[in-house]
Image 1: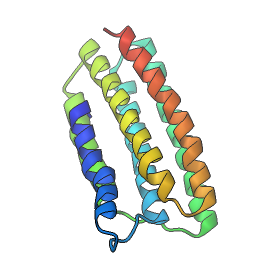
Image 2: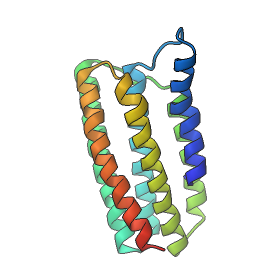
Image 3: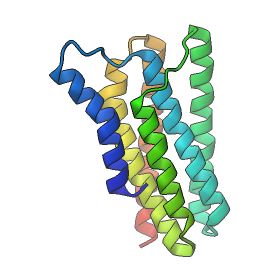
Image 4: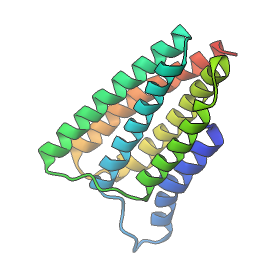
Length: 177
């Protein structure tokens, strides 16, 4: 997604959920089943974006980054699936997951129309924005809201990895200018 669209989608989703909860104490807090679904959905979105980059890009650095995104997000999602199975938790679809998916599909369509260096720059810029926003949502909403210690720990581990992804994307973006 481009930076402004992604920011809007996540702000309306995760951010809005947090602000509504803060303004209306009677509103139910986001629960672990919803958190698991949001986190898994965010991972699937980045895996899908990486697969598109691998199909479209001919830039070695962009392809290596996309391979890293696909591998790392798949590994975290596999850990998340194992954890929810162990906990007997069924991830619960929610408005945030739905808005993430809708926004990502629109962005994938936009990126599909690009090619060459224009695609590479747009893909990497999206990855920078996506990781900034997801990392903010993890640290500001999902981790503090998680009730299960194992889920919280997995989210914290994911945050460290995704922060390194953000730094990698930022460096790659600089090299593509």
